Length: 401
Ligand code: NAD
Ligand code: MG
Image (cartoon, rainbow, N blue to C red; front, side):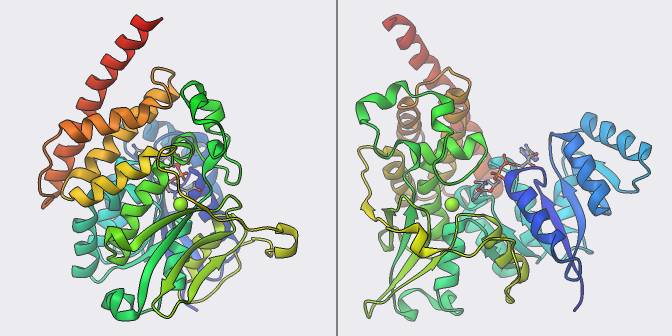
């Protein structure tokens, strides 16, 4: 078996750490070629010492210099790169085969795209790359012969439940619809009238998955599911009305595909991201992920509940953006990132998050998304509009107190 050379973009994050956990179980299959992060330098240093990659890349020069000195002191020969192109350079490097794209947010777009343009096997966790620039990204995959494997657990489940030749078109392979499951997050049953006063810590207390704060808030508002609807659209070439969301509080069924003959094929497992990560790393083989066996008898009931858009308006907003097309999903994503950041900093209420996004979507001129510059312009404009909108929210809140 030939060793596959793996680059991990965002190696200190939750997905990055889980990827290294799976890689470490298979020294006969994988070697780490490059790692990247933007903070947690000591953690990155320890990863370099353990996995001995050829490169470590950081966007900023100062933390890169700290890491360089730190590694020199310990005799680790990993070369430290920094600067605007450092992440894209390791993603597209001729000596890497597999790129795990696991940077969070819009910041992951250009390096994920660089991997696709270089024809790599791209394990895509960074859903924002598809939300913002799905058309451009999918064209890059197709035109450069890249292999795209979804790591988001729902999309990985759908990928596993579709026939291999699904690119022929979902209707041509007998698919009626794609069913994304959603846990409903920590506020699934909390009275809607109480949601305006929930705190960041309450929003980050997810019942089934351990995640960082941004994606945890996205799970609580269910914008995460909204982004995943857009992600599914691009990955599987599925129109909005072929994608359905159903609440499934146990997070055991990770998503499903319904066929014309009435069959529904699902992928099940314990909620542990190492399963989709191992699927992507091993593809087309199955490899050990370190995940325990699913005990269905112990799990007991598996519930499914209809989606409530009055409770979770962010899902409706994401469908709206998908139907609007062009730069609308990038606007949605940028406004959401700014609003979530403000909520986490205590300057915006939880239920104001969808208000900010809706206002920004409604007041922005949606353009066609032909080039990356179109997307980045839309992203910048939406961030600016969201900040302005939030200023008026905080003024209103101050006036009301
Ligand atoms: P995280 O916040 O734990 O880690 C993010 C990583 O990206 C870190 O290594 C960080 O250093 C790096 N990073 C952050 N900002 C950066 C920047 N500006 N430039 C360069 N690097 C930067 O995030 P995560 O939970 O691992 O999620 C990563 C991606 O995977 C996200 O797009 C998320 O939506 C997706 N995802 C995560 C999960 C999960 O369970 N955590 C599940 C499905 C999909
Ligand atoms: Mg997911």
